[in-house]
Length: 186
Image (cartoon, rainbow, N blue to C red):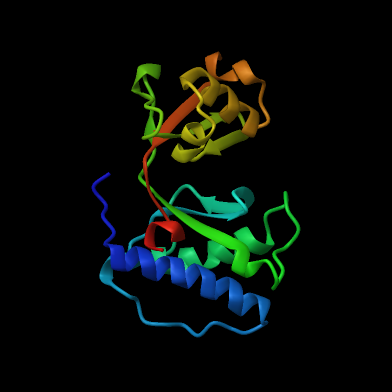
């Protein structure tokens, strides 16, 4: 991935994510700010992940960039906290307990050979007909999955049978990500 974020930009984005959730909890409209840097005007795929006591508490994002990174982080932080259908909305009392992680995605690359998939470096997107599932690069590492398990779990995320990655009409894409969280700067 040729895209680069400085430590100052990463810290800013993490602070912005937390401030956006706080503003939403307080029913305040977050004022539009100037862009922290020209880099944060870049459109990129982005996911914001929330953890509480090392457990997933929310994760929302999109694969392709369609908004400047700075705006997308604010939007996805609010969505991860309040719109992830797997969880109840975050409460005021929970906010200090949340750990925020941001993943900035590279463009997708269609896989021609499964040996291209590198655990720890790549995330996966699997598509078949109108179903698709995505798992970020850190997921396979966190669960100590091998390549086959990563493929199977991504199929399951898409609502497909675990072996669907072997079917001819299935498309498999990989991507890398710049991944950072609040613990990186504490």
